[in-house]
Image (tube, rainbow, N blue to C red):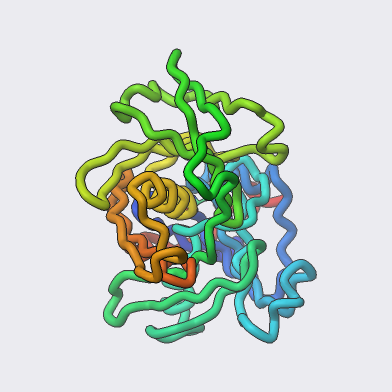
Length: 292
Ligand SMILES: N[C@@H](CCC[C@H](N)C(=O)O)C(=O)O
């Protein structure tokens, strides 16, 4: 390790969905997929489910059109190096990093993501972070289950939900029925997800209270997925007969994930707000051998 010469990083998590955070305000860092995979390696690297590169929106060609609305762009990568449109837990941790670095204050701020601008609210004194996650895209708004998910010898009907990134939500009898999830679950028809899919397995814990396990595209099974929890919340709400846009009444669900708990509200205008913790646990410098 060549200490001070390395690129600075921080490590953080949101309900134990963990990230390597790399401040790169001017967008000068070359971060090819192999470098991301090396950084996220839990044995030979720093370890994480993904990387959050913090770039000034005006300095990133993909993000520049959002520069008038949001100063900072969350350049999110999965641990296998692939790019994803959005990361809900990552957005909370990203906001926490901006606060920690003095680049944002507790209160409201806007974040640029590949799925568009997302509004964040940072509670005072290290409290929870809320992200307005946009509206859910349901393939069958009336509650139909147009796809199936298979894992560990079981097959379940599932719902296709878009949260800026793609999800398949399957209600199961027991979270253990999904098995060890070492491989990606099969989703049928595969053509429903030309760019891959995040798969959530869900059980009901009580009224407006569910629990999930998730197998993430580009990362495998993780301890939490914010966009996945929102997809699950909406699928559960429709199953339970709630449709805030139709009824004009917001609805809130508690979503337990292996790494903690999220509170998710679908507002009467369809906007989904996710609230949960965001924690920074370490800072350091990256051995240049891990980067190109
Ligand atoms: N863990 C994230 C989602 C990260 C992206 C996902 N794996 C994908 O490829 O779409 C979250 O908290 O939303």
